Every structure is written in structure tokens, then in C-alpha cells.
Length: 182
Image 1 (cartoon, rainbow, N blue to C red):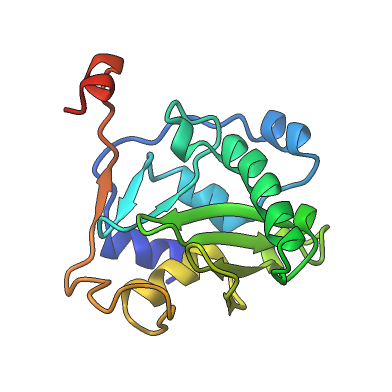
Image 2: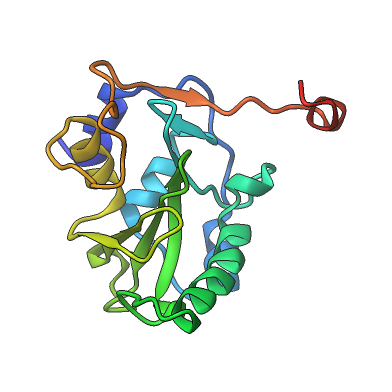
């Protein structure tokens, strides 16, 4: 059973995903994305695993979950981190955000080797800090290993994951609801 199949079994999606125009997206980015991520996006809409970890989604209508928006934000944040004396696991342009936690942890692909996206490792940056946790496999395997407690990311809370991890689709709120705080 592949990591994607295992994740689908553990945390079935509760809604339909959006359709992604991969050729257009990857031509805009200038590089291909890993196959396991593409497969996850074929099943999961914007949302979170165990109400804590989310994946950035290509062309998402939710700005905070949009992959391209997060890539732009990451370049600024990573440059600031480097200027402030923080060490990065790779050059800024080689770190591509793929997801994050509700606490502010950020999960990045390390695009090395750049031409082999299915071999990219992950680097997880703690919130508001310079420490990095490294994981040598793809995003689907990472999610499975974290949700089954095969690995622990030091900056994740001890209460995560729950004993019965799940996936929940993000709730879209109208502009009026966002403005009123409801």
C-alpha cells in the first residue's frame, strides 16, 4: 500500500477536491511538483489533518491555503530569516512551502536535486524560530508517519496527533462573516 493509499484509508477526505491544471501551474512555477503531492491533491480539498496540519493547495480560493501565495510569502520570510542570522537548510529559492500547522510550523520541500521532485526531502521550520527538522521522504509518507506517531516533530504539540486522526475540509466563510468575526 502506498503512502497516499494509507493516508486515504486513515483519513478519508470528506469532500471533493478542486481540479488542478498541472501543466499550467508547473509552467508558471518553472519546475515540476512531486507525484505524491499531485496524487494527494486529486483526493483532498483545502482542509486539515487532525485539525492541525494542512497542505497548501494549487490555485486555491482560500488565500491562506493557496500554494502560489505561500511560495511568494515564503521567499520574503526566508530572506528575512537569513538576513537575521538564521540558517536555512538550502537556498531560499530551493525551499518550496507545501504545508503548515495551526501553530505556525511551516513544511518545505527541499528542491534538491531540482530535476527530481519525487526524491525531494522535507524541512519543517518551527514557528517564530530558526530550528529545522528534516525528513528524508515525501509529503504523503510524512503525513502518514506523523499521524501514526512513527516520527515526532519536536515543535508539534504532544497532544498531536489524536488517537483517531481525521481530515476535515476547510469551511469557507463569506466576506461578511470574516469581517464580523463569526
